[in-house]
Length: 341
Image (tube, rainbow, N blue to C red; front, side):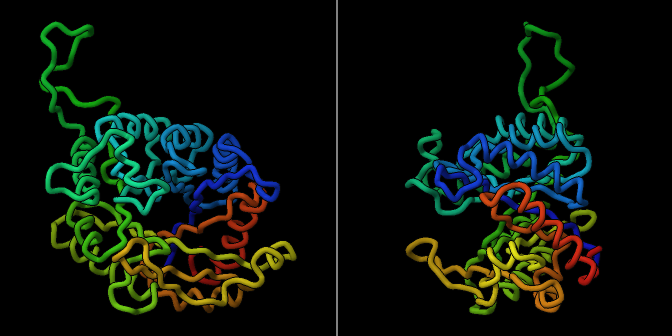
């Protein structure tokens, strides 16, 4: 099965001697450089994680727009934007502008988000759940508003004495990006939210972390989640086929640098942990081996087989050159053996 292959960067930066990404400026500029390099070597996507109050990438749309202006083919996305922190109306304008700059290449992953650096950080952004809502409810409500706004339908009553002439009828937010509504993904950590995303006609992102709902290995739980998502999509009557991505840490050991960095990793299995007091989660293993071994190991990953898109998590603080090498090694030595290229 042919598969789209992209990278996913958390954009970590720290002013420590061992880091190749010392500052926020380094993280942003190196992200642009890596996206350009990934496009040149034939990768399909450049995706970025959004975390607030952290030395990571917190403001996605300037970065996505800059990458859009510097590239011409590669998909540009997020995995994920935490909708507890977002104003859907402002986000519709920002994402519309970034998508138009990129020529319609944005693939935006949104979600409830993960445990953050500070307690209830969204409160500092001015957001509060409505009475009776949880923060997760607020995130889903914001997501539904955002999806409606992306349809481009008018909803606002025009001023009878506007500064500039208006088109007839109710007004929509501008700039409108045609097709962006169909390129929104939901990062689902549970089967229930995957089904909800399918019902609403979003695509699905499943990461290296999922709520442990059966005790099975991560890839088996994810494969079931993907099937539940597709069934919900079909039952809702949406046209076409939805897209699905899974994220993995995969390193092909092809030279001494690879063996030094990752030669002792990849033999462990999944891990179990708690992301809050009550939520048991399963964290996926890393893969690190020679290409022929990786081909055999990845062939047993049921979730990768179910997905049309694979996002490779990259160690961005090792620098653009090395991360480009990591991506190219998968494209050159692993993807052909898997039938992905």
